[in-house]
Length: 147
Image (tube, rainbow, N blue to C red; front, side, top):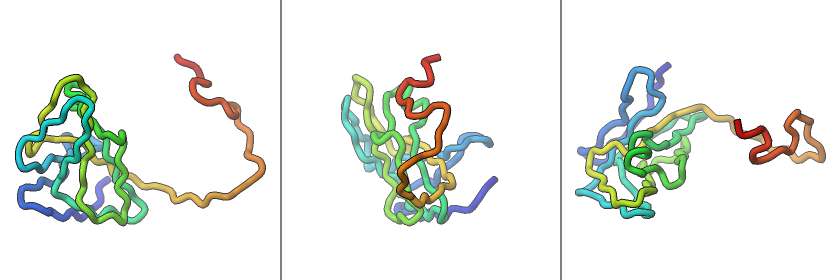
């Protein structure tokens, strides 16, 4: 299933998000930097993309790590999952954190994250004195077992 999403290129060097394969859920986001950006161990930097998006109403853009970059380089979004609301029209930035013990370098054009656009439900929160029961109940962290 495909749907149009309007993208404004804020810089002529900016690259449109691109899917790496026919069945990829996430579209790669590319760094738009004015030269190499060194990310020290434990440091977080904002990486511009040079893009702004018009995500359709009822959808949200979720910015996730690229698995290879996170696993091999230790670079992943600092907020784990970035949320781009349908009414945001500013530049899409990736808050990239270095989880490794070595300085890493981001170059212009590097794929730094991936964007997944999904529908969402706007909840109407209703106060109540009682919730319906479930088999799990109030069991929290680890309550369903470790294997």
